[in-house]
Image (cartoon, rainbow, N blue to C red; front, side, top):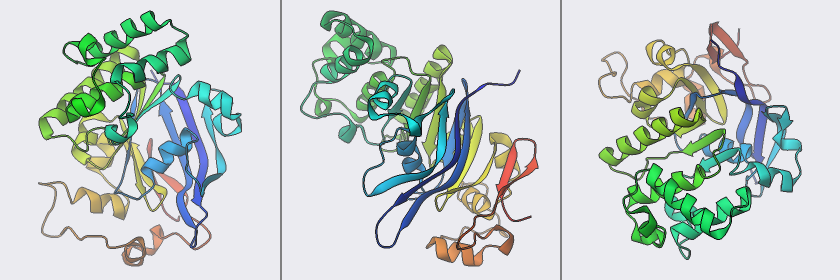
Length: 309
């Protein structure tokens, strides 16, 4: 049975109006399906986090979304007033930010921050919100949850801070969770625990997950579909197995050579110094023009690559 689409992004472009102009996100098309995990993959600076901030309309100046649609059901998020968008943030779409130490306010307790979200969006009393906050901390595997409510972020370990962030993100039972590099600063054992927790919570709640990552091992284990991002654009997207088994774009093939065990004598790992270098070395069929990008072409069902015909 096909999964219904809960978020559709069409032709999204976000630019930073600096000198020179930075095209952080270019003509991006994505579909996130109900209850599924879509991984947005690429190296640092390729536009992954800016895509997430564009969805939530939190792009910092001088950045601005210049075109496109972000459809949540029938609503285009780009056409909503700020107060309408605030209703959706944290409520229907929530986000786990890359660094919980910057996302959590250091001068407020963990409990007060979760309670604020619950009272703002769900209208709970202080006592109801406190009980619910403790329940959420319990759900994300925090020991002694009532006690943890009184802790400040700096009193928690990295893994516990990440669990607190997940609890806050899930407070209003969102339809969509955006997880931006949710395991980056954690050791391997804690990474596995956090990803297992997210998968479990997703299944319990039938939640859609947009997983932003550069870690191909995590993506291979946890994603249903993968969108490969480079230089602000999606260069390839496919079901996870298809993309790992038969990568079509030169950039995807390059990244996959970085996985231990996949490199071969005729596919040495070559570091990409800049996008200019990469596009110069890239076959012409895949190269963008100064004013036009190659279209996303279907290779087979549910597998697209950006190239000229």
